Image (cartoon, rainbow, N blue to C red; front, side):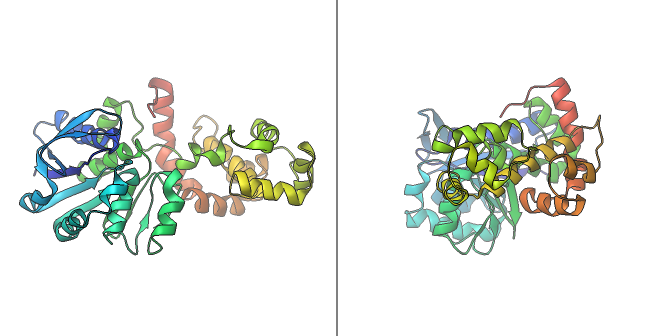
Length: 334
């Protein structure tokens, strides 16, 4: 059975939000004896669509023709700066609402979630988007439960993904659901990608990076990143930059939107996460918790589940083998 997949583009959409998922499905076709996916690009009008990088893509259908494509297996809405204008166009939202009941999988890439949210199609769902826009999405659409660290989420039949290349992760997961891990893995290898990319958006976001805009915290952040397992009490951290503990907490909330303790816990959890991927040295949770000052095994398990959305054991089973394979044999394209 050939599954019909449509991608919705518009002026100033993000090019990779369109081309990334498209290439995943196209590669699945190329690696199979017969075509598995029929691909259609939909836009405001038939013809050339200028993306926000200046490169044009060619749409074969206008959005008001979407009903002619029904029933659709999958409809994905691209993100990009142009989504702000698109969500103000009543006709686009009306069409999405009309076709949604006859689309098996309706989803978005990156900030495309704003368009689906504006149409009321994500109400009551757990969703994600690019980490930079997650708080705005949560503030403007309180009926959504926004999870800023997830790479992609399925909730109530709706699919949302994080920024840009996470659309490729989402598309790979859809191919895996349709045709199994074997084909999805071959597509991932063809694209030089992880089948399941380890970690969440936090590894790319400002919260876990030494930042250029961290102001007076820069010296302290350098020390924390160099030695996450160090004995970093609140008083000691404050002394590093010669402020009071109370003022340090205010600085962290101002520049990083977290408390000093939460930031340090995130750093330590990231180290524990990386250790879980090392198949050569299978370390117990108790030893990981001790090594990275994360309490006991049960406390590490709870923190890991809360921050990454899966338990440490599930994470290790899901990601360790692909991490070992690709780090040994292939570069990772982010």
